[in-house]
Length: 251
Ligand code: G
Ligand code: G
Ligand code: MN
Ligand code: NA
Image 1 (cartoon, helix red, strand yellow):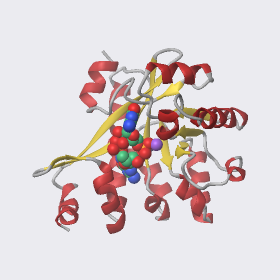
Image 2 (cartoon, helix red, strand yellow):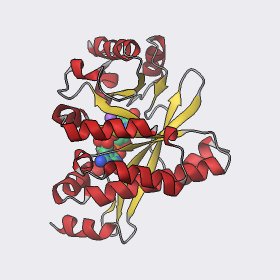
Image 3 (cartoon, helix red, strand yellow):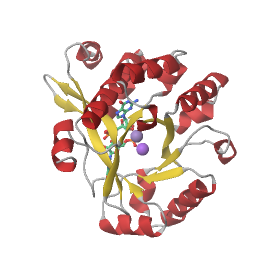
Image 4 (cartoon, helix red, strand yellow):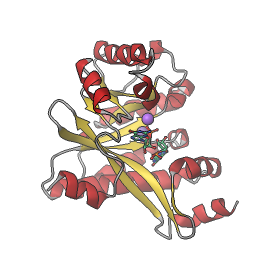
């Protein structure tokens, strides 16, 4: 309950901060984008991970203003990097189902892009399979509008949810993100059958595919051999503050 009260104030107290995790093209060894990952720098408890407070934010509805803040900050940051002459990478922002259930999501995204002067092609929005399962007319309409604007949509943690494969080909999405649990078990378990299948599925549907949670060179090499060259994970980099991204990748 205390945490809940604190979360109300976190936004105005500037306690929320975005870390960025690089997404690497392992074929070229170039950075392709970053994922924006929220952290809460609590005045008493220090850095709090999102799995501790996103559920609270969702229950209280605070995820809506917080999510909008993340979107705006991430776009602002990316535009600043582009302006400084950094490579024209993209940014991926996680959206909660609640944000999708607001009927002004499209207007918010459009506005943020206009405000930050960021070209839509550099923004990717990550959706969960939950959202796809719910697949109401409203969410599908919003997805179609966003895609029409030029924003890329990705399905996050792909393979862990209950969405049916039949839906996939009709959804306005551009990318599948292979869940890290499959990548982590890939070389010790039958999970390789799963990663291989997702990669082939993506190719056949002409979708981009990115593997998450890549922690070892063996995993990266294996994925590349399977024709998945986009990767994200501790093998390349942990999520970092924007300044560290700048130092490590753009200098
Ligand atoms: O960053 P981490 O390392 O701890 O992320 C944990 C979970 O929190 C992930 O499922 C991630 O998608 C989610 N998450 C991180 N940042 C955001 C955000 O800005 N909005 C939403 N809705 N989820 C986020
Ligand atoms: O659910 P989502 O995919 O948005 O969140 C990504 C989560 O995975 C974040 O919590 C991020 O910190 C975490 N993460 C990123 N790379 C790795 C990795 O290589 N290994 C593990 N275990 N977690 C990772
Ligand atoms: Mn994600
Ligand atoms: Na994920």
